[in-house]
Amino acid sequence: MALPAWLLYALLSAIFAALTAVLAKAGLKNINSDLATAIRTAIILLITWGIVFFRGVQNQIPSLSKNNWLFLTLSAFATGLSWLFYYKALQLGKVSSVTAIDKGSIVFTILLSFLFLKEPLTPKILFGAGLIFAGMIVIIWK
Image 1: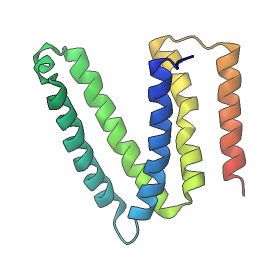
Image 2: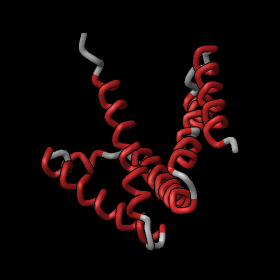
Image 3: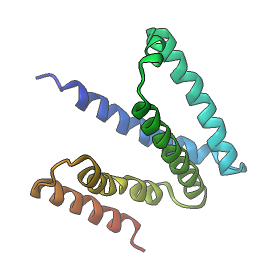
Image 4: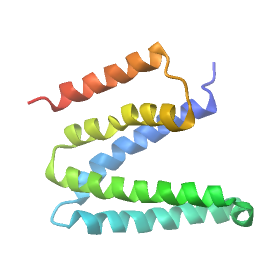
């Protein structure tokens, strides 16, 4: 039985997110975390635009709506702030603790998607979010 495409991509995302944390921690030695974030961001920028041009989808830019631009811009600001805080936390803390809290963003995402996107909050989702939150507390508990 083949995995649905979204699940495969989500699993690959999780694996690369784990690599990101470990490799970033190793790369943060004796460097300012903001500079490290800027270097990482510049490299990501080159890679993603390379993919856009390789796939030939840059011609879709003129068809983007004002809403697309607004929410993508707001998302970019949120991403930038998240990365800056994440790198600083990685520099100062243990990777396991920092990433546990960072992945706690799932709980906030569930809440925000309910409030703003009107996605359902089922008992299963609430239970899962509670387990994630509990797991985060267990990992960071001293």
